[in-house]
Length: 142
Picture (spheres, rainbow, N blue to C red):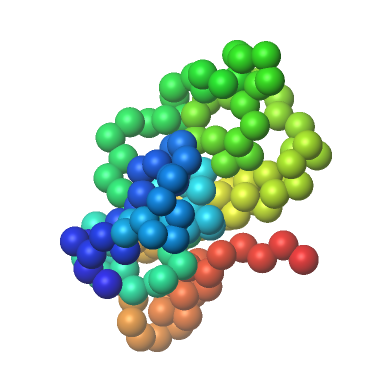
């Protein structure tokens, strides 16, 4: 899929609000990428072929982790387990079991980029390719 292909570009409303178009939306809705603020370097080069890429397929202009979450200060608090904005209060993941899996997946992705400096480089052969493929897979919680 190419960068210009709408189905390979993230839907802004799905990731930061609510997309009302659902399955009729021409843009990408990837649950594994919720809360992730790392842009896929393969997508940036028009070469991401992973239908379920856990990285973002949208140019991110703001560092949302530095912007305080508006909803955290509201009476009901922030209820998004994948919220990309800054939270000062400790969040209770037991209120939403999905929050643990999403947070673990995001941490694994971010750690893979710290551990593997070649994470943004396409490797097609050799032992490095197998290692790269392992990093591209979503974290599975059993």
